[in-house]
Image (cartoon, rainbow, N blue to C red; front, side):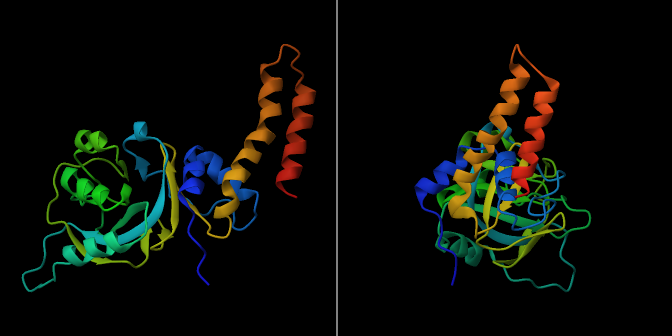
Length: 236
């Protein structure tokens, strides 16, 4: 049975936290290794001022290299946009740039971001390079990629709706994504309904450490005692 999607209130609560807190909270459930479930730092936030975004992945694969002389490839854009429109929101476009090296041409710029926002997307994550940062910033639309680029070159869709592999990490259509200026995290569906409360628990556990560091009565030994206690709780 598919895991039910979060309602608007649950998604809003997740958006209150930064992505590192989301990652720490996932660790409390012990459902995956701690070095899994997030994209490598080479795929970075290009518009950090947008803040955290949360949404369900709509996936694609793209290339920007010139087609070969004998190649006759179908134009998938119309069917892809219908796929994006039909998916429940909020959504985040997640695209694998299959070129080697990636980033020759941008799939996303002002026009593409605008239609995706209209279709319920809140951001775009790519293993390549987007462009038109100022115009996309004005939309309040998040962008993640290797770097900005100048041209769209010969960019086109290869396929959509299947797995997208970004930096060695596989994102499936429908995966719940949390992303901010720190990077991109995939939320396991089994923990998603309880994750906001786990984030609050992370903050509750960290608060005594911060308080003692800021206290006029600071004690290193007390800090160590509290820190060891926090580690034991994390591994319970």
